[in-house]
Length: 145
Image (cartoon, rainbow, N blue to C red; front, side, top):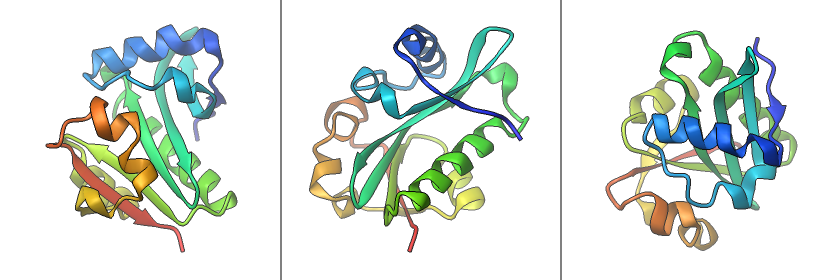
């Protein structure tokens, strides 16, 4: 099991480096940095992921693992950690946008592809939905009830 810690402002450059490396948008990350988790090894942040809370729904965003660290379970543990947090805080629905990980989120975590308009208005109005991710991104949901 990997141990994640809450991100601090000084982590933003490391998070930005990962997101740039894996071609994920950085827009809006700083506004929600308090909701990010990071994993570091050797003094370098190698994985990150965060969320935007719009109770009773939540938007997962910017989940990334540097390529050299993939296949070790870091990403899966990060998503599980976030899902446990969401259950503890009694969120009902978890949304995310993805370009190429639809099968991964479906197979490992039970997310299902849905029309973007099924997301609550607050999520549809987020930076992630309105400007960071194009309309071609796949919207997915997981129900926590």
